[in-house]
Length: 184
Image (cartoon, rainbow, N blue to C red):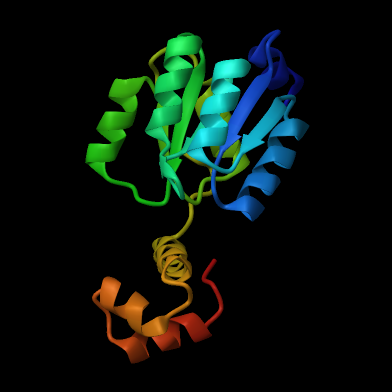
């Protein structure tokens, strides 16, 4: 990010990241620190609410579905404690209904996973009601499909039969997809 981008953050560079995917959370925290933010992380709704209550940040990135509840609960606390904070809701389950709910409750933007640090930073620093520019290097449709299959597979505790059932896919087809490398 350019010096101008870091200057746009302003005086208060506090950022709360709430996500139950610990490896993703660590990577995102490092990336956002490199972009000039002062990052605090939380793995649960309870921890996110506690931080939002004690030290409401200027910026927040909140996963929608967490192990102990809904990330919108954290968004509500942030809106109550610091109405001017910029909040981006992140989720692996992109749906119009949840996007509308997130924006109504006070999120500035809504991004589907996997989103990279550049997309998240652009959404956090977007000025006014204008939309951030489209990503320069978006993922291919094959990659998005592969990421979705991998996420459902992990959520089903790496159970191929259960994953295939939930994806309405034949088990052997799923096994072939899982055996291949990820598309670019």
